[in-house]
Length: 195
Image (tube, rainbow, N blue to C red; front, side):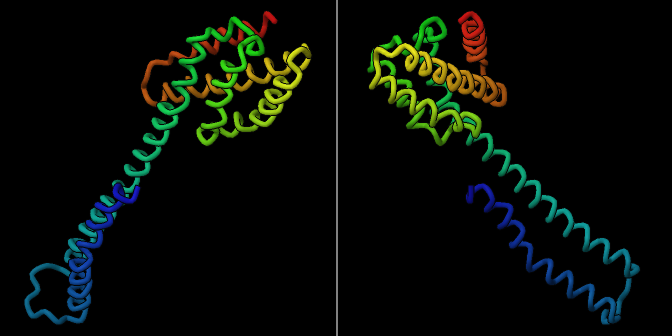
């Protein structure tokens, strides 16, 4: 982000010497130090203030644009590194049609690892669901024949996946990309109603 803010800062400080000279000229004018007066004092002051305002506004607008560009780049990073690949895996397995607990341990671990290794990309609401999902995953590995434990795992996986798909959909709209996660989200919602 530093390289995005540097040009406006440089522009501002590059004009610092000019600003100093302008201030000194105004002070000299007020003292009546110049022998030739071609314009009234107020016009001279305004002619010095307008460039100062324009320099400040260009700095401010550059700074705002840099912040906006940084936010877009962070959203794109989240989308590319986690949300889009996760939603693609959901599609590849058509996960709304099957129970997560029925997958092989290796297949379950793929989704589990994706969530745990990319937890820093998750929004706050989804992060709150991770501890329950983690515990259910560990319990399901230990109690493979306990139907109640397996159903709890399915419920927690579905909850966290629906939140992730919802965020994927939101990010794709903000980045002007195809909202491919919306269909999977609808299928999950329908599947949960039927169960």
